[in-house]
Image 1: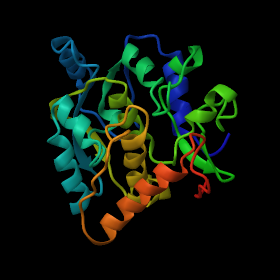
Image 2: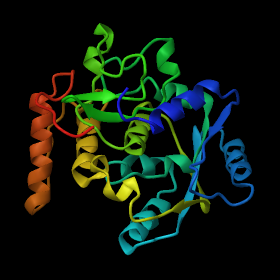
Image 3: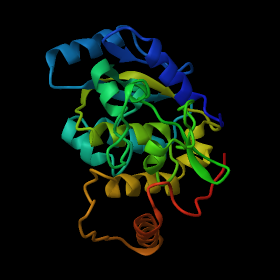
Amino acid sequence: FGPSGQGKALNLSFAHARGELIGEMEADDIRPPRAFATLRAALAANPAWDCATSEVRLIGWPRPGMERWIEWQNAQHTSRAMEKGRFLEIPALRGAGLYRRAALAAVATADGAAGGRTGADAAALPYRDLWVVNGQVADCADAADPLYARPERAAMRPSGWWPVDADFWQRWFLAGLTAGKVRSPLYLWRQYPAQSTRVHARCSLAQLRACKVHFLLAAGGVARGRPVQVWGTGETLKAWIEDLQRTMVCWDGAGLQGASGGG
């Protein structure tokens, strides 16, 4: 259903994996030798961590803006820093991590809706792949119910669509999970002009802002039921206020009324 490939592949791989530690590898990226062994050792040395990520190095086509982002991301070493930092930017590359199976099962039930996902199917779907299909936000990584048609899932539809990594880390920390970061670049992220991070609509600043707004206001979110003060200037301030107001007024639990987008 829909355009998903990434989310479906991740969920299918998780369903077939048998180990207690789960890692992944993008086909066009690189890891140095013994990267997974280093992450495994970090988890063994830090039993309170639910996952171990690492610093990242860019290869192929680095640009100053991306270099600045990765420099910031690499500086988010503690779980608390990453938890707070997710409302600024994606605090770690999901692909750079090694995850405890039980933690991925827990993140599968956290989606920002009252009550969250439940049942055996939830534990098999730690990844969402959000698109707008025929005017509705759909989770195209959920083959059984991508349009949230089942009555028990109707109130779980997100208020928008955004990248898999942004959604993953928001739900990770919403579930109360922790993360640590190895202070070594154990993931080499290939850059090129046409990569989706740079050119796809759901990776735009507007969609990333919509993701942050959703999880600020969602069930369990830090701004849920609290007064919100927005500081900023110019168009950035205007955009944040508009998104906050739109989500508070128009998100009826079944998605934003009048949602629009591609897919």
